[in-house]
Length: 340
Image (cartoon, rainbow, N blue to C red):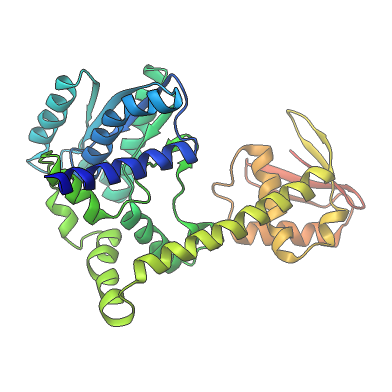
């Protein structure tokens, strides 16, 4: 019994350290916890609930939890999962928000995969609950195994450096306190805490790409190539994070030094310093410039970035590059351009 209590405490302490070290929660935060009722999300909810007292006592950080649960209406067990999560919340006086939507039907209507449509529905609902409750954060239960799967999927897709880093502890106030915890430890925690979570049997079927990576690719890599493949991938992630951090900060420095005027309508910049940089920095500079102007780089592909670089390198006055209704880049005079 003492050993079991120690294992639970070790997991909780590890997650508390992640929260504090990465500044995931601030005092008086309201946190929306995405809870499916499965092992990962129940582990997350139980730990965040249990840690409130010690985090307040040790660090003066108090926070409130609210739960958001989405029923995709795919499996007959979904109703029972809703009741399970709702009862868990009632027993602990945690506000519970619920949404159901026929993902299979609506994914077809919108010409999307069930996986993508379901994810969009979940995160849109989490954001809706966040606004409704004046919450600051959305907590999701991604763990170490999930991160390895994400990195491998990104590698298969031909991702750049950011994709090979996988998920972070905090992305636009979506926090992932379990990111250092292996699935086997989550399952052990559930068992020792008698949580009796729900199990989604579709997770054991190789019907989605992620499931195929989890069920087929990773076991093959472990058995045939390297039994420590998970640890090695995470080690690679941490090395690449340092490289990405340096490159991102250096690119922002080059870009900020080049800006002449930044208004609501346009950004005027002198790109002469960028032209002397390595091509890696040039491409990052253009992405960062676009992101600064329109808020993101969604729908901006690598071929667009390369075309813009060619425009700037040719440096011909009055020449422009237009990407639909997203933005236009116009060369005003040698080394000076505007994006609007």
